[in-house]
Every structure is written in C-alpha cells, then in structure tokens.
Amino acid sequence: MYSMIIFFPPDDTVTLSFSFHHLCADEEDGLLQSINSYRTSLNLTVLTKNDNAECLAGEIADQFKNQPCTNSTGSNTVPGTETQFPNYPTLLAKCHLNVSNTRDGALLPACVPNLDPSLVLTNFTQTQYSGDLNDTKFTGAGIGSDGNWIVVVLTTSTPEGSFVTSEEDNSDSNAAKLTGKNIGMIYLLFLLMGSLFML
Image (spheres, rainbow, N blue to C red):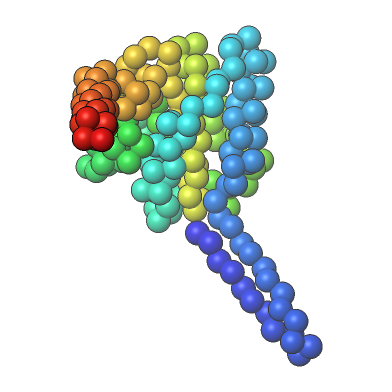
C-alpha cells in the first residue's frame, strides 16, 4: 500500500511525505542476506536469489495483503490449514512458471505488523519455517512483500523445484519459435532473390 501526503504551507512551498508498506528491494535483499547468515551459522550453503521465485513471492504476498495478522496466520498457521489459492495456476502463469517446475519448492508467508525488520527474520528462523530454512535441499530463494505480509519462496536445484520459467524449460516451444524464425528468414531470402532477378 502506498500513500502520499502533500502539505501546502502558507509560503506556497510543497512538502511531500511518502509512506510505503512494501519492503523495498534493498530490505528484501537484506532479509535474504540475514537468512543466509543464519544458514551459514548452521554450516549450510547460502541461498541464491531466484528472480522467478521472487515474482511468485510477490504474487502470493499480493493475495494475502488484505488478510489481517492473527495468531493463526502466516508462520503461526497450523500445518495442514494453510490458505489455498484457487487461482494458483494463474499466479504461476503471471511469472511464466508451471506446477512441474515448482512442486518441490516451499512457500513461507509471514505476517508482521508494519514489516518491522527486527521481527521479520524471527518469523522465519524461530518458527515452524526454520525446518525449511535448515533443509539442505533448498538452494535458492525469492522474496516478495505487500502490506503486512512477506513471502519467502524456496527453490531447489532439481527440475521439480528449479522455478525455471516455462519458456526456458519448454524445448518444443523453443523449437517452434526457431522454426518460425527460419521460415520467416527463408521467405525474406526468397523475396530478395526474386527482386535481384527482376533487375
């Protein structure tokens, strides 16, 4: 949520005041660095930033943004009662992902009033989410936020958790694109050759 307040003092100067409830990219990167420091302290490998997972994290955070923080949401959710999104395939499609490349990943939503940085990290390292953060199968992460919600999406190095975009992964689609380009080039060469013979 963004808000802007414009003040018009008597001397006709304009003062702007901005209030942002999203974590900025630097703060999201800071959370990733803090998570990596946590993992390093446990002798685990660091998580690399995954832009596709970050896209999905942002989409998921947007779904949560109007849901209030309670004792049973986010990292306090009882396993098995997590929020289900009927539009999940649409969220994946917005990030050019599909279920087959994301099924081994983990979605970790947390609700922290005003996304207080001192509380955000503990919502991941001192809750049920620590099990996922401690898991050696996870090799990458993407982070998104909206309102009081922040979502960490963990990825793996396996095809089922790589979060590789469907465009990068779909070899048939790439072959079709290449074939279409070849046909276009052949057609242009044919026109060029025909114009040379007309001269």
